[in-house]
Length: 476
Image (cartoon, rainbow, N blue to C red):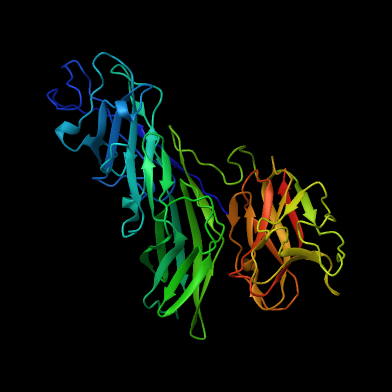
């Protein structure tokens, strides 16, 4: 995955004046000073409203002013509505929405969020991402302060952070493809939640999963873009998928086990071609962009050097570990499961199947007359191989390679891969030669992961797959 870090700079700096006869929560004398607000959202990414880096004129922001050390229940000004200009200046929507510092000089803090909405007495904001007709309208930004400000304070800086997840598909179609009744849907995730303004906590609603339709925009020249703002989740379920509709046909790309992190933008390149009248959809590896918020000038973080900036061209590539699965023998009439085998090359590592059925693993270690020891993922079974116990600290430009074969025609992306909590989308490539290995190499892996997991799903593994020669290298 190629990671592009997007930086958001929010600074509150210009003055807003209004008559002291406002009927705010507290009547303030003429000596009180209005709180100054002026915002910019700056980044090196494409600008498009608050969903990316810039405000659109009229965007509504909610502001709370609270005593320093207090909470929203003791707010001095609650959910005041301010409007943003294109330049980032915030002005109150009406005179009774203006906010004043306490005239006695006592310190206060602020809680700011976007988009403005009605807030319940328990300070919960309702989040609903079902309607994607205007994704920018459901993007959720949030920022609290805790340093304390008073009527003698200068400019106030505040960082707003995206709380949801953005998913983007950059779609290229072949010129001979007609996208009749084209649509893209996200399956197997929830669409409703509440956000606690007091704690900054997002809680997904209980209940069944929803179907979320992406907003699709025709960019011309056979290019389309599909985008959606969705709820973050630690791990998508077995039925999670992106579904493409082309005429009467539907094509699914599984998202099983993928993590959707808050403040993160996931971008996939999608190619649609025509094979004898049948649509072929190939979705490439995801590019992940964090929406980083910092105060000050724009900061550009290099993908390979976000935590320790150095020249990525320097250093020596080393093997972090290699695993060929030793030498295996049957135990009685059975091949040992992942949880039973003890002949690993790296015998200090931990090897396990996270989908055990009781004590039995549907991933086993076996060999054939032509193939030496390897992991076998049985068809139509949920199973996995997780390898942990190694360290990638200090390594950059890491690459993971492995050999994969199928017991029938299949595709190399059927076996999913996770590095730590990050799911790596394996590029699709057909496996046509039965029980013949082909090598998969994945690059731009996340930093500092300590586990690798290969996952087989009962829904997608219909052939039975073999895994061998796992190798992780990195530059140090």
